[in-house]
Length: 463
Image (cartoon, rainbow, N blue to C red; front, side, top):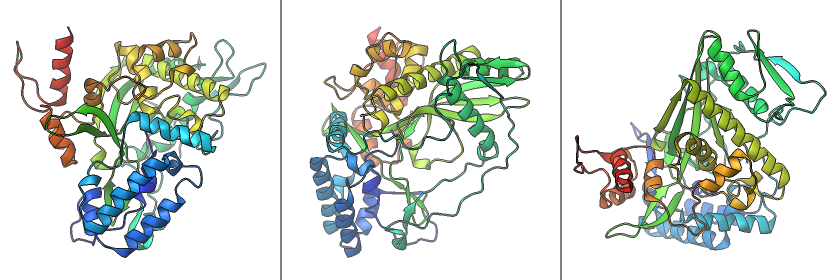
């Protein structure tokens, strides 16, 4: 779930004093302590809260009650330095996130908004004959230049600016080729079965679907791999004097924690990543539904903040990798059909049709018989048909619509098997209170550790 509810919150913060050796990241609570009583922060709070919801965007997805809760917690911390309420803030139940989208719909904010569509990404124009074009990789373009650090925004003078795009050294050299591959896969995915509007050629072969294209590449000597990756979502996307701001949106699972309240976890982002290597085509492409309302393939170019972590839940190679990409193409086509049939949905159907986790859960469920992602938000009223994706949608769990959260999926969605690697002290403490991360005796073999062990123990109890 990307750039959803927290972007306006992040703009309330100002920078910490510069240090000789700044830390890699700074927590929201650490910033709040430094800003106690700062009149500039209080003024920024009032101005930004007044602006929230006045135009389409993340701020419009907060209901009045949620907005009031957010203001109270922030103002208390800024006035008193007591930051406990910000340790897991803002924290919303999945049902509350859905209520915010309902408010946006009623207000007409974000309706039909599907920003971010690039030219040529949509369905190929209908024609009597399919358009034919070569794959065209390698493109021959140089890697993107590293942009200057952003210096704009209402708090730029105080040192808080958007983190901006940070090209990853290992991905940037393939950026142009990855962008071309993502564009081709997106257009092939929306071809009409049996009546393609686009045919891509490569070394004498033809492809009318994403899976066909991967098979051509394998035949030409390439290897293909798909990994199912999970990480925390960086909604704020800000840095403070060169340090990444670790300020996630928290999901209240409503699962009790012994001696505490309920388990709250940073909302996670998931994506399936396609890696192709070979004599001609070397690309890195991810697939997920974003806040732009599109489930699509996207070039992997930029680095992520280290605090978001990274965990590989599944790895697929060969025919299984091809099948994962085929399923991703089916998910994209299904979402496009739904979006076209329901232009009234806010944010292009984001949340209502699903979020990043839903788009990737389809693939995981089809390949493994179940999904381990949380939260899943899609409204099943939009999946009543008989298509492959509709059937999978009805077979998977849904969160925030009456069913309790599933601890197994909550834990499996976190970006690490080791709670000690998490940068949030409150989350580490909650997981320890649940017994996660401690050794547990097993009937055979060595004890399992960490979140992986918790999942395997749960699976054994079900058998």
